[in-house]
Length: 557
Image 1 (cartoon, rainbow, N blue to C red):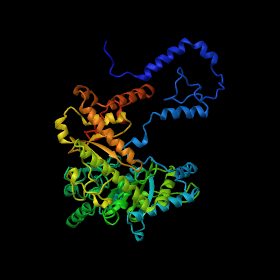
Image 2 (tube, one colour):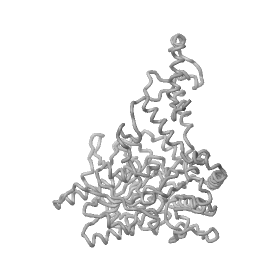
Image 3 (cartoon, rainbow, N blue to C red):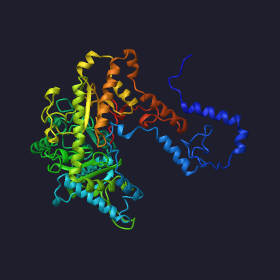
Image 4 (spheres, rainbow, N blue to C red):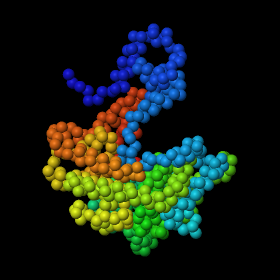
């Protein structure tokens, strides 16, 4: 008997339920419509014979307590947020802040006439961020909250594109072939801008010599008169390195001196925008550089707000083209809008302001410095085991880029003593380990840690380095010393279990369940909605063009 490679659980359950209904049709018709006056939320109209609605709106509903219990129990299957070490998104909210969220959960950030106090708080946050990034008040910086960094990046890119178009049009030149420069390590939101807004994305290769970030020495090879700007990343999602903003700015200065073409910079500070100001103040990356026209950040990452908040600031009103600004008059007053989204929750802006006035500069410094210290500890103990090599470098003395033996490690409480970067630990199996234990696959470590509740991704580096895979942990505010100790112990237990395991068993384990889970989700959607394909690709069309040939990973923006 041959077994199917994929069995649909939904199909089997439906067949069983339909068989029961057909066999008990008389009993069901007698009891239908009766009210069950039972206190338990588990006694409701959805039973083993009438499943919970998943794909179609039900004709009749259930009481509120039962609806809550159904959804609550469904969500119990989610992972533990604090063990999701793949994500940069903050998962801790203080009780007092949660009260503010609850009190303001219905407020709409788009309605300034109804919520003037909320809009005033929004303006205060803009001013604080502009000051934090060294904008000059004389230049009249301007900005807005956004839906995460993705929207902010798109707005920054659009502003550069529109300014480039206006300049080219005034000069009577062609505007049909804009391009934008970014490193091959760019997070997907940057590439989305290029694809969605019809701008050629030119990816500058990365390498070990360039710290797996944009290689500034190769930048000139990708520039021309159609370059609208350069996306520079303050904190690569691969290894946490800051891209060399000042070096890139100097390179663009030289290019302008040689060609007369001025090219601006947009900083993607999704994570680094809330780390560098407090931990690496001597790193020049922000509005201190005249070529930096705009900066985005994620309030929901190291800004310590819950998911959904981004920010963008332009150094001056002149860098936000009037063409992108709309005047709205139908909500009771006159307001300006220059975001892609309109209605959106206002409570996240309140969360951000709460953090600003509650923590202040010193509070943010202590939290981010502690995260960096925890990341350094994890980096050092991983390398000290002999099993692993770190590609992230925040645990090494500034200027040192090679592995340092355990006995020679120098320690300091000052983040400026070390290479600047995010509290990220990116590592791989050491060359000696792979030589001694060739049957242990790095992906198996990620899979077995998932069994223990941790989400730690294993994925390839960008093109040019895609033959190297890394494991990565994002250290956030909520990682305690106890969790750090347990994590390292579990990594060692998993690794040594794999060492002692049968190579044939390991070959099977090296193929995670993700593809099987994808098949299951697609099969469910197919049953209810008709033919669909992965990643939204229409049936019959190839999905190969939807990402790098080495695949996607979840960077979480």
